Structures are given as C-alpha cells and as structure tokens.
Length: 431
Image (cartoon, rainbow, N blue to C red; front, side, top):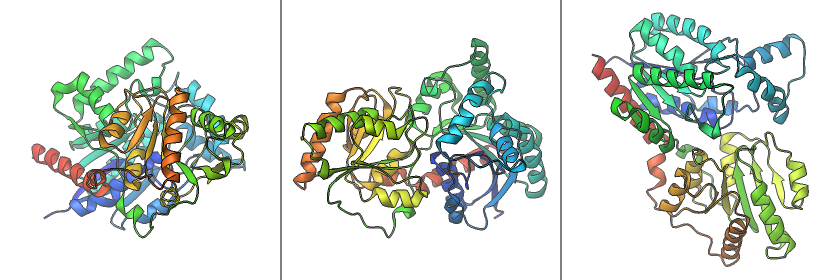
C-alpha cells in the first residue's frame, strides 16, 4: 500500500514553545502510526516569547519539517534584530514591543498579521506537491490566514483540504474589531472557508457549538479535542508535597489573571485561616501583560508565590506532579476553553476552576467530578474553595474521584487515530 502523505500548514511549531504548538506537534508525532506521514510546512525563526526545542526531539525522522521566510511582523522583527545586532527580548518585553504593533496592524492586515506568510507558504507548498505528491492538506489556526494558503493549494493541486480551528475565529476573548467593515469581511471569509474546506475540525466543544449554530447543515464539522500525551507522564511518580501547594501551568495575562486568587489567598493568610508556612503557590510559565512583582506585593504573598519560569513542556508537567491542587483560571468570557485542562485531568489532582460557571470548561469539571468551580470575581467563593482544599490536605483527604477511564479519552495517540480516520474518510470521498 502506498504511503499517504499530509501537508501540515502550521505557523506555530517548535522550536517555538507555549501551548499553541502542542496540538500540531503531537499530531505530527503520532499520525505515522496510523498510515499518514506529515510534511510540516512552517515559518523560519521569528521573534517569539518562548522556545521549547525539546519538542522536536519527539518527532520521528520520517516527519519532514520545511521552513520558509515570511513578511509577517514577528519574522521581520527577528531578521531586523539580527541584521542590526539588537539584543533579543524575552517574555514580557516581547509582548510590550509587539502588543501596540499588533493592535495597529489589525487595521491593515487581513485576516491577521501573519498573512505575510501566505505567499511564501503557497510557493513552497506547490514545490512540495511536485516533489512529494501529498494526498491531503491540513491547515491549523491560529493564525486564520493559514486557511487561505490551504484553500489556494487545494485549488491549484486539486487536493482535499481540512481546516483545523484551535480557537474560535470570531468573538474569541471578547474580540473587538477596528471597524464594522473588518468584522463583515472576517465573517464572509469564515463562511468562505466553511464552504470550500472538505472538513472542518474544532479543537474544543465551544468552537464546535459555535460552528454548529451557523453551519450545521454543512455536515463538515467534527470535534477532535485537545489532549495530553501519556509519554509526557512516564517514569515520573507523583509526589506528595509537605505543604499545601497550588500549581499553575501556563501563561498569566489580563485574560488569565491570578489577582482574584492571590487576593483571596492573601486575606486567608492575613486572618491566619491558612498559615503562611503551610501554603505555597508555584507558577510554571510566563507572565505577559501583568506586573507579577507588584501584584505579589499588593497581596502580601512575597513568601508564598514562587515562579518556576518557563520550562520545557515535559519538565513543567513533572513539576506540576509535585503540587496538591491544579489552578485553572480564565477571564469572565465563557468562550475560553484552556487546553491545559486535559493535562490537569491526567495529573489527577483536584482542579480549582476560577472560570465562568456557565462555561463549557466549568461543565467539564463539574460533570467529571474533577474540580470545583467559582466565578473569577467571587472572592468569597474563591476563599471558600481554598479553605476546603487546604483543610482536606491537612487531614490527608485531598483526592479526586475521577473516573480512571476518563483521561484516556483525551490521550494524544487516540486523538491522532481519530484525526487519521477523518483523513481517510476525506480521501475516500475524493476517489
């Protein structure tokens, strides 16, 4: 049987780090097990907040990764800094330098400021088709402009194309638009992609439901969840910390703000309801757009909050196994569905969900019995949950009743099998 090849269009790909690269990297890792060899087309080095080259080591030699230049702001800034010998920025300094540019660029770039990669990806994609004769095209967003490349490659090569959405395109994080004209054309382009893609993949139930409301009659929409990789958890035993330890994995930002939790914890400590020497808060990731030092001082938590910094993905998960409780915090936007929740499920630690009670993420925690949920702005509710978990910890009763089979439904290998099956179905319809 001839090997099947899929061209994967992914702007965010290792050595870039952070959560946005996990999904496509793990698909590239496991798809070869199910008869599909990925040809990953991505951008060359860009100015980015975090790097995790260890993820590339997980890919087998049969996974080909091809990189091209781009005219997008992150690539231009990277090249400019190196041409002129400018010092590379890290973490929040990158966000500061790019944030205003990104807001300004939303006036001029359509559908997003990565559209400058489209001509490069299109030309390289056509060359790869002549050389490799791939059977299918798979584009994953953000950025949504990748789907333009997917459509154009489908048009020019007569190859089936599947569009994957890791975030909602319109209305995510209470998104605003420079003008009503920008919104109008984004809506038209979303409909265009739904019309021309052979299948559309949603990475979480929020995206799936949003598309179903608008495009249910298309029959193209399929859910392939985010997940966790069992290999990331092998050979590292759980550890019981000596003090009550709250752990957070990922980025703190204005949309994932720790202030409500810090304020509640600070008050409990000041009233001696939780002794300061019996509690610790650890963060593995980056603070972006938040002055963590000032916030920690404001809440009198300088001896409580510890930053582990940005670690490789596997290292961060290993550190999270040393905690008592996993913190999940979002804004008051119910459309947010953090992908880290599935790794939290696999950690089998109680999950403290500071999320909108009406959100899909809250429903998952409640229905699975894996955590407690409270609104981000309900300080008394947050204090109550902290006390419940702390008291259970001191009594040795801090356990979850999670169904032993539940995390397995979200294992990356199983999800890759589901995706490969959708690939096969799409291919069979075109023959």
